[in-house]
Image 1 (cartoon, rainbow, N blue to C red):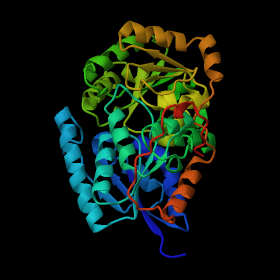
Image 2: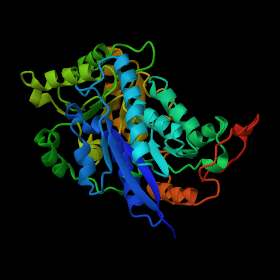
Image 3: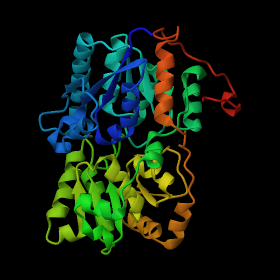
Length: 409
């Protein structure tokens, strides 16, 4: 075999790295691929926990650390996000010119990943994309994700429904492989902590004697979305109706308005008696977060993990607002508006024995087996195929295709 193909894997957030770590390891250990790991975004910001430390803890070599966020580390308004996109394109354009990979691999739907993917395509570097085909109507992630789909030449959707959507978007079936969800694989393969180990690791003995909720709330970024601070205030007001429920907050991401949410979280935890009611983490890391999910009374908020990963564990989830609208929802998920009373009613229902029994019967659509290994194997075949690097075309599925049976892997 000749020289290994260099795959630039880009990671920018704690949640994304939790999903990508197995893929990164597989690329690093591949006989046909060489890992070029580029760390950027919130990973390099103290405001978001400086989670590059979690990447470093993997032992994998980091090829580049590429800062892109404002000096304060947070996006205060939409124009800050736009400036970050422009800066990210500049940073990655320069990086790819100096350290050109054979292909770039990205996951998801965030603005900085969109920008990095655009830089790769403008440089003529083939792009592969994980988790295309989803729909999230309450976030700008919706169109960032679909833009990445149209730029990418190889696709790894997380379930058959999303794979079929990609083909309807004009992606050739032989470039679309349903590999399942990386989060689902993590839950099936990670050796999660015991509840006692989790309590000790988090420094929260309260969770051994109190039921607790795992709460993550990110700003809704679609046009017309409510102000994040007010929306989060409705959530905390609703949770105040459950004094016997301890709350573990994981802080908001780097979207515009996230800083205001995190300020409220800090204020709640610092208030008199706050430590007896709640705790907050900029990042828990994948192992602790998923372990906390396993033992919680409910996952509450609007994070994708609340609708994508909770079905694997069969735990109740309350999905607030429209950020995740359009995703597949399983029987363990209750949806509600962002109003205080609606949230309170949904949480009350989620905590009932009847709903917990229903949640335990949920079946995840994201089980693709050895998801990370399948991604690596397909990358190996792709970079060695005659089609690698050729311009992509538009696949016209034709009327009625979505009713036909098809196999995308």
